[in-house]
Length: 258
Ligand SMILES: NC(=O)c1ccc[n+]([C@@H]2O[C@H](COP(=O)([O-])OP(=O)(O)OC[C@H]3O[C@@H](n4cnc5c(N)ncnc54)[C@H](O)[C@@H]3O)[C@@H](O)[C@H]2O)c1
Image (tube, rainbow, N blue to C red; front, side, top):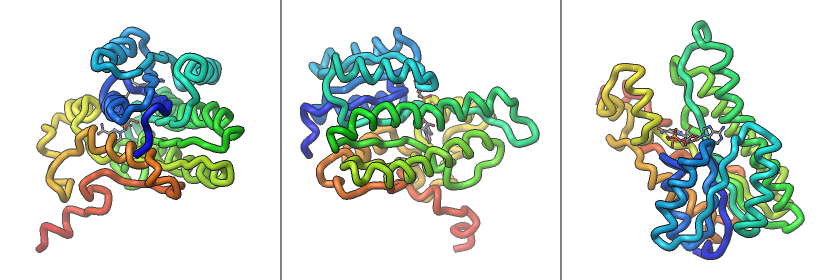
């Protein structure tokens, strides 16, 4: 792989899957920008990676605000280097079905999980197009491919992110920029623990939904992103890759009859 010295920005990377993506890309020798909402936690994440000697910087911003996103991308280019890889990882989850979901929860979910992906990608490709080079990766969810009850806003916003990735991939292909979408299945993370608490279930209860019998680890997603960013994947664009142990293609009833 030839990622060393190239510059990556990962949104929502102060913790969770995004932080692990940042760590793995740092270990691959990339210069990494960490974005998140809170300046304090973003700086803390940077500190944790910087002590290992990695070149890493904090870029706190709200990905739902166009002016903050534009200023962030400018700062990345002036302080970290030429932006070559953007990973749209920031996301929020709000539960609720069509009959119960609050309007604000719909708006909040779409603001981060769909509009934030658009704003960051737009600001990034405006830099990448003149150079005819770059990579965009969108972290969506298998919830954007399959239907989950009581998650109507999250499923819909993640589906929007998936199709946005495909549309952008076709627009950017002549510009030498690849765009791909990674869909994590249930991942051992604070986001999933919070959902489990809300539903009053244990994390282990989810295992029967996953053919591999284990939750994804954040590093499973980070390694896939490292590969998608590598030269080996240069001809791959517009693809939607589930990292889910088979969860998105599995209906429990089909196996229970064997
Ligand atoms: N955890 C899972 O099981 C799972 C499964 C499928 C997909 N995903 C997706 O993976 C991504 C990472 O999930 P995670 O589990 O690490 O979640 P997380 O909640 O631990 O991390 C998400 C990060 O995004 C940040 N963020 C939220 N709104 C933001 C904004 N407006 N601007 C900038 N940053 C913002 C949060 O502060 C947080 O640090 C999300 O897009 C999520 O939807 C997670």
